[in-house]
Length: 468
Image (cartoon, rainbow, N blue to C red):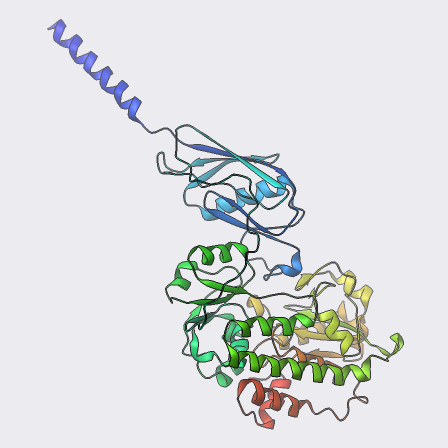
């Protein structure tokens, strides 16, 4: 009896011991970051990517809150480590963040044994990542840790793309102008969200499937379900990397600091579409130059005292554009002085009332009303007029607050930017441009580049930012 009891106990403890030997140990992975980002690109780790932008001007989302974790050139080890931690916490799928301090991030798999492989680390020039796994052995996917990531590669495009994805905001109107609307298989939600004129003017936009929330990020799996062979998208390197790995050609949109960037982007789009598109691009660029020259012939000789101080607002009254945005050139070409021309920023940058009061603009233009679920331009106009803080502004006192038209898309972003220059010049210098018929200009533009015949009444509605 005693012998049998001893054998049973021995068997029990052996079973526990052997079971313990086969139990998977939890995997921990630490990432040590050093250095400082010296160029744009991506930081890549464990299958995740973080965009590194040159500056806010090159970030397509600007300062909007709902966007992926990102960094800017100049980010140090601590900022990069924090971005890695934030990315993992947002993903909330495979890893938990154990700690993040002094440039070191420690991660632990959520479920023991769930991680089957570890992807290589890569970073932009100036940053170095070193990964260390502890707990159990896991194979590492081939790759050199710490090598520069996201450097621009030579782009290759299909000879005759037939399935186009118009993801980047202005891409739909641009592709229509180049004669390629029939080939668009998917588009972005923002291209109709605030633009009823797009639904009226563009023949297929209502029936074309759309991707939601593209300003934040693009759902790659959903995009691929449309089998595009050419994608016109945002300059977000991690998404461009995904497309490249999938063998799909992509052309990122540009946020240029100069008006020449408008024509440059038109020609780049045309190069992906063939000879007919190139002819249309040439015609647009010729039109752009002719109209710009017409305006500048009258405004270039203006003295500073004759140029009204102009503030251009987007999204809300305290969101504006800085020295790295081509809106500075738009205002100058139209005969104004941009009050934010020394602001170290690009597009859609927040300021405070104190700064606005200091600038005290003579004229305020409002654009992007309704964007990012914000107030409409009409609501902003009423709010500014009633705001006690703003009532001391020269522009408010003299009732010089103007709504920027949009039509089929924002005039400050796409190919209608030349219309914005003409419209602004007419407002800033009505006597100089008393012969400029903006209604006719809008009608001719829509006929020439969108093949849509606007009535004069419709042109008036667009200029007054009214719906069809």
